[in-house]
Image (cartoon, rainbow, N blue to C red; front, side):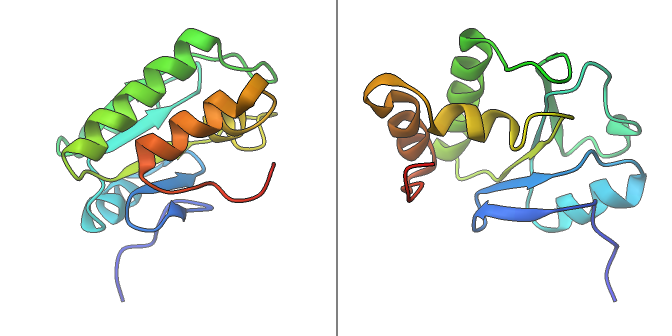
Length: 133
Protein backbone atom coordinates (compact mmCIF):
# COMPACT_ATOMS: atom_id res chain seq x y z
CA UNK A 1 0.00 0.00 0.00
CA UNK A 2 1.32 3.45 -0.95
CA UNK A 3 1.54 6.74 0.87
CA UNK A 4 -1.91 8.12 1.81
CA UNK A 5 -2.94 11.05 -0.36
CA UNK A 6 -4.02 14.53 0.63
CA UNK A 7 -7.72 15.02 1.34
CA UNK A 8 -10.00 15.28 -1.69
CA UNK A 9 -7.27 14.67 -4.26
CA UNK A 10 -8.68 14.09 -7.73
CA UNK A 11 -7.61 14.69 -11.28
CA UNK A 12 -9.45 17.47 -13.11
CA UNK A 13 -7.57 16.64 -16.31
CA UNK A 14 -6.16 13.13 -15.89
CA UNK A 15 -2.41 13.25 -15.27
CA UNK A 16 -2.19 17.00 -15.94
CA UNK A 17 -4.32 19.08 -13.55
CA UNK A 18 -5.60 18.08 -10.12
CA UNK A 19 -7.55 19.59 -7.26
CA UNK A 20 -7.12 18.81 -3.58
CA UNK A 21 -7.57 20.10 -0.07
CA UNK A 22 -4.47 21.61 1.49
CA UNK A 23 -1.71 19.03 2.05
CA UNK A 24 -1.10 18.95 5.81
CA UNK A 25 1.65 16.39 6.31
CA UNK A 26 4.86 15.32 4.59
CA UNK A 27 3.25 12.11 3.32
CA UNK A 28 0.80 14.17 1.28
CA UNK A 29 3.69 15.76 -0.61
CA UNK A 30 5.29 12.36 -1.19
CA UNK A 31 1.97 11.13 -2.60
CA UNK A 32 1.89 14.07 -5.03
CA UNK A 33 5.52 13.61 -6.02
CA UNK A 34 4.95 9.89 -6.68
CA UNK A 35 2.25 10.89 -9.16
CA UNK A 36 4.56 13.23 -11.04
CA UNK A 37 3.33 16.48 -9.53
CA UNK A 38 5.93 19.22 -9.78
CA UNK A 39 3.89 22.32 -8.88
CA UNK A 40 1.40 23.17 -6.15
CA UNK A 41 -0.76 26.28 -6.44
CA UNK A 42 -2.11 27.55 -3.13
CA UNK A 43 -4.95 30.07 -2.95
CA UNK A 44 -4.69 30.38 0.81
CA UNK A 45 -3.43 33.33 2.81
CA UNK A 46 -1.11 31.05 4.81
CA UNK A 47 1.45 28.72 3.25
CA UNK A 48 0.61 25.03 3.37
CA UNK A 49 2.33 23.30 6.30
CA UNK A 50 5.48 21.30 5.48
CA UNK A 51 5.64 22.77 1.97
CA UNK A 52 9.44 22.70 2.12
CA UNK A 53 9.66 18.97 2.85
CA UNK A 54 9.57 18.03 -0.83
CA UNK A 55 11.83 20.34 -2.85
CA UNK A 56 10.79 18.62 -6.09
CA UNK A 57 7.38 20.33 -5.79
CA UNK A 58 7.42 24.07 -6.41
CA UNK A 59 4.90 26.09 -4.39
CA UNK A 60 3.10 28.98 -6.10
CA UNK A 61 1.11 31.20 -3.76
CA UNK A 62 -1.84 33.39 -4.60
CA UNK A 63 -2.97 34.94 -1.34
CA UNK A 64 -6.74 35.15 -1.77
CA UNK A 65 -8.85 35.86 1.33
CA UNK A 66 -11.49 33.24 2.12
CA UNK A 67 -14.92 33.82 0.58
CA UNK A 68 -13.55 36.22 -2.04
CA UNK A 69 -12.76 35.56 -5.70
CA UNK A 70 -9.22 35.79 -7.02
CA UNK A 71 -8.42 38.96 -8.94
CA UNK A 72 -8.18 38.98 -12.71
CA UNK A 73 -4.41 39.38 -12.37
CA UNK A 74 -4.22 36.29 -10.14
CA UNK A 75 -6.29 34.29 -12.62
CA UNK A 76 -4.06 35.42 -15.48
CA UNK A 77 -0.93 34.54 -13.49
CA UNK A 78 -2.37 31.12 -12.71
CA UNK A 79 -3.12 30.51 -16.40
CA UNK A 80 0.39 31.60 -17.39
CA UNK A 81 1.94 29.19 -14.89
CA UNK A 82 -0.30 26.35 -16.15
CA UNK A 83 0.55 27.14 -19.78
CA UNK A 84 4.28 27.11 -19.04
CA UNK A 85 4.04 23.84 -17.10
CA UNK A 86 1.85 22.33 -19.80
CA UNK A 87 4.52 23.20 -22.35
CA UNK A 88 7.01 21.21 -20.27
CA UNK A 89 4.57 18.31 -19.70
CA UNK A 90 4.35 18.93 -15.95
CA UNK A 91 1.46 18.05 -13.64
CA UNK A 92 -0.59 20.62 -11.71
CA UNK A 93 -2.61 20.29 -8.52
CA UNK A 94 -4.28 23.24 -6.86
CA UNK A 95 -5.47 23.60 -3.27
CA UNK A 96 -8.94 24.84 -2.51
CA UNK A 97 -9.92 27.65 -0.17
CA UNK A 98 -13.00 28.06 1.95
CA UNK A 99 -15.92 29.48 0.01
CA UNK A 100 -14.47 29.06 -3.47
CA UNK A 101 -16.16 25.85 -4.64
CA UNK A 102 -13.27 25.14 -6.92
CA UNK A 103 -11.01 28.15 -6.61
CA UNK A 104 -9.35 29.22 -9.83
CA UNK A 105 -10.93 26.56 -11.99
CA UNK A 106 -14.41 27.79 -11.18
CA UNK A 107 -13.35 31.37 -11.74
CA UNK A 108 -11.62 30.54 -15.00
CA UNK A 109 -14.44 28.60 -16.62
CA UNK A 110 -17.68 30.48 -16.07
CA UNK A 111 -19.29 33.87 -15.89
CA UNK A 112 -17.17 35.68 -18.46
CA UNK A 113 -18.25 37.43 -21.66
CA UNK A 114 -17.64 35.16 -24.62
CA UNK A 115 -16.27 32.43 -22.37
CA UNK A 116 -12.74 33.86 -22.61
CA UNK A 117 -11.54 32.34 -19.34
CA UNK A 118 -12.94 28.93 -20.34
CA UNK A 119 -11.11 29.23 -23.65
CA UNK A 120 -7.83 30.15 -21.90
CA UNK A 121 -8.14 27.19 -19.52
CA UNK A 122 -8.93 24.84 -22.38
CA UNK A 123 -5.87 26.11 -24.24
CA UNK A 124 -3.67 25.87 -21.15
CA UNK A 125 -4.67 22.31 -20.35
CA UNK A 126 -5.12 21.12 -23.91
CA UNK A 127 -8.61 19.84 -23.04
CA UNK A 128 -12.14 21.17 -23.13
CA UNK A 129 -13.90 21.80 -19.83
CA UNK A 130 -17.24 20.39 -20.97
CA UNK A 131 -20.64 21.83 -20.17
CA UNK A 132 -21.48 25.46 -19.55
CA UNK A 133 -20.68 25.58 -15.83
